[in-house]
Amino acid sequence: MTLTEKITKIINGNLGVEQKLKEICLLLQSSFDHFHWVGFYFVNGTKKELKLSEFAGKPTEHTHIPFGKGICGQVALSNENFVVQDVQEQDNYISCGIDVKSEIVVPIFQNGKNIGQIDIDSHDLSPFSEKDERLLEYVCKEVARLDLDPIINQDPSEIV
Image (cartoon, rainbow, N blue to C red; front, top):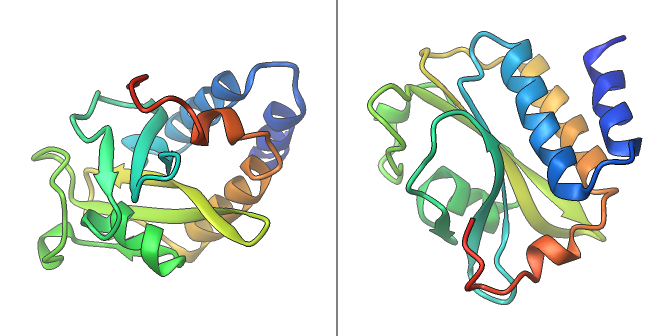
């Protein structure tokens, strides 16, 4: 079974939405040597910020990210993929750890609206390819088929 088939199988499976997101994170992290941290961020209700949902990798203190701040916050405003092959070259970068050397963020759209994103951190310089980007776009299209309203509209006091 290909990786895209595995993603689709998770999406179509009987697990709850959060468990599906977690399974996708674990699958991606275990499938690529350069995917050291994989996580989903979603808009936080009506606030102009992202909140961390499911992830695979070391815990992060960045559970809430204001729109415009860091790579994830920039994608929340630009609605475009952002591939950073060397985080040292980015002025508006939020350090997630001394090991992180590069990052890729791809937005998730539902009904034409940017409602979240997948974020991948790598400990390697320049590891991300166009193939990685296309795969993550596929993942985001599949995730967009889920009912994400409970995650997006979750009570702000329920911090992950």
